[in-house]
Image: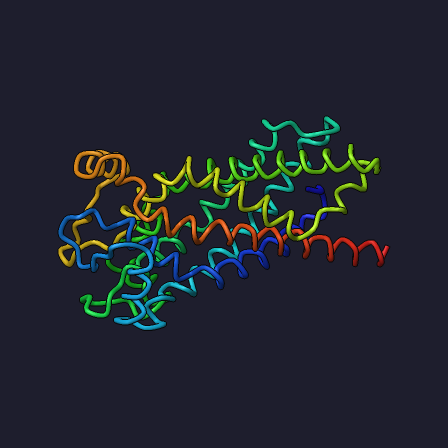
Length: 308
């Protein structure tokens, strides 16, 4: 991935994030509802599997239910991807000042740095998204939307509540992004080197031979690797971000409490609830993200070269 021109990276990342959310949001709602359903007393309905969940939500809640939390999802994803690619490219540029090529370790460090910074900026948005996705038509005192949720949370729980789930979110953002982008960069390098060796082209131009299909495969493969390793952090974060009961008492006190209770009552399977919907959502979504990102970035760079 080329380094430099950070505003192009931010714009490409934001466009990629918007395309991704628009395509995959109903599966995100299903995933979140599976993640918090610990089998104990809950105001959420129980679903047998992902298709059953999609059908039930569509039948009982309509399109509004399938796209609950869509606005904060679009806002958060657009900001996250824009900032992520910006911080990621900045970090890579900084590391390249003292060397000709980045090692896998430096790709990992760049992705981890970007992930941590993004998490601090976007946690309140993701918390609101999670709570809106968990609302059902019969819930007492529902939020009317994104801004009402923010105001209500600040009024009833204080600003600290906006950062519930920050710790697992940091682990998730740093490790997930680091694994995904490191895998993407290394797989991408392998493809380019393979084509260079077999075509006899200059390695500086081999990157131009990658097509949208290549970006789709690379994006999906790297995403799958990251999901399998980091998914438990998503479950922990979602359970922490649930809205407290009317008495104001949260179901889980902190990350360690979630880990202990989940392991005690549900075992290892509890940490992977909703993973089917997550894979169905994120594998093709990652393909779309990197197709949009790489093509928008190439278009912006081509336009910039024409202006020079």
